[in-house]
Amino acid sequence: MSIAERTTSATRADRARQVVVTLAEVFCVVGTLVGVGVIGTRVEESSGGALAADATLLAPLGPAFSIWSVVYAGLAAYTVWQWLPSVTTSPRARATGWLAAASMALNAAWLLVTQQGWLWTSVVVILALVLVLGLLVQRLADLGAPSALAERVVVEGTFGLYLGWVCVAVCANVTATLVAEGVDPSSPLADLVAVAVLVVVVGVVALVLTRTGRRWTFAAAAAWGLAWIAVGRLTDAPHSVLVGSAATLAGVAVVVLAARARPVPEQARAQVS
Image (cartoon, rainbow, N blue to C red; front, side, top):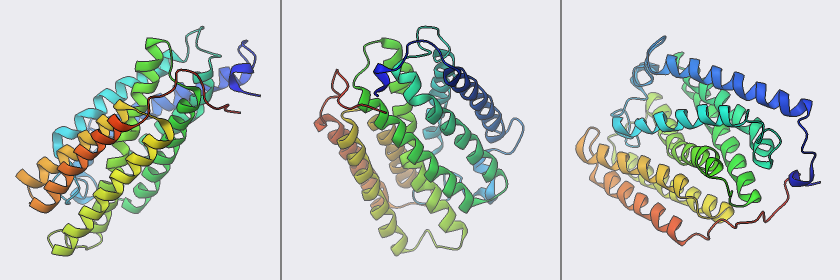
């Protein structure tokens, strides 16, 4: 039975989903307060500075992280949106609620484990976050393009930005962990590895766009992260013209891929059981 064919009356599962999403949002807010230094150590200062903007070749420059303000605002809006009576039993609320809650919990968990300096654990957490968000966006694609503006902005927009940014962040996270383990970020080999990772990022973006259709918020967030990696490597330490140029080309490639991707169909093209 497809989501669209399910009962339109709120069930216990619907109410449980709403409560869990709300609790996950609260947990996410607490984690954010820790990560920005209100009740903990700022991310860039935690883990011995391994996650600072100048720690690795693939670390985006500081202003890049302002995108989190938009994502967090979107998650808060999503939490409110899914409580609206007209939304409670909607296909998008049912398809995304549990995954949205998982993504918020993983986000907070990542911030908390980096406080402890557990970098390899943070890699596992952020990889899980990418998988959860990828599945969520795939479900949105299966439902087709939404007709309501709120769904376009609050659901499609928020999770598109979220996934696009995390696709870039996971590479920076892995690189930071390797550098913390003793890999020299200034060696010629490190430059080549960084370029290879950027190619992988473009490949992942291409895969997502192929599977889910044209998603400008997703592509914009990925391009944003890549652009700030380029700025960082061309203007800040560690300097690398090769990596900066490769990141610039990767950002352009992401935008081109999004422009060439097929539009998201107006009607659901698959059933989500």
